[in-house]
Image (cartoon, rainbow, N blue to C red; front, side):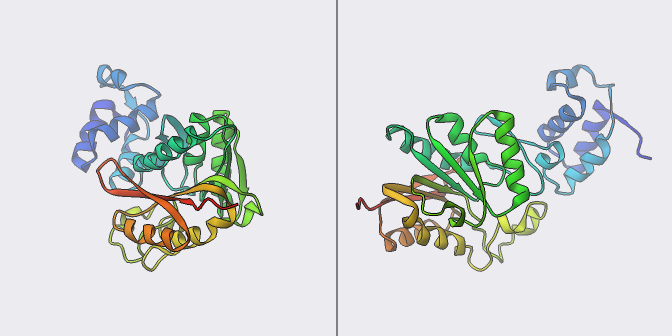
Length: 273
């Protein structure tokens, strides 16, 4: 049986294992139900389970999976191994969506395709309550997590199960957003992401298959003048922009992530009746 560690001993173990101090403190706060100030002043307090979880964290298991929570755009979201962990860079996509929605009157219709934990859909609904938000995911397990997040946060989103546009029928939207799988199948970073759902990370090949499918199918579900915004890899911006142009979009734009890398590309569906 692994002996219980004190707060100070757990932080010392974290240093030995190469775990960042901030991550170790977050984990200990989760286990104790106390804030970081309490940890500093209660170094001798025992923290059951700390040793095992710190070793799992050092082995690459995501902190969000160990705590069950991830902050995103001001919301605290439940996450599980069935969902992609929301990243701060994806807030770039949400901020762009909110800029566009601010210019639209009434109750604009928004669809989040491949919603995972519900992060994008819920962040948009929280910041723009008048928007009518629909969210789609192929994974029933992920959709259950997203729906539970919506209930807990009191945010009304229409959750639909299925692949991309299929659950939308003939419905049209003012804004379509998506953070689809876009990592190339041979990307050397994939092994480090082994704890997250593989199909939410990569479609295989050059990583562009789902982006192409979304761009190709979007027109049938956009109102005249509606927008499609897509997150993508840092080196995929030009390819995504060209696909948008080839499929009849104009006003092509780009947003960069927190590190200044190309992260989201979007376009407006041509103003047609």
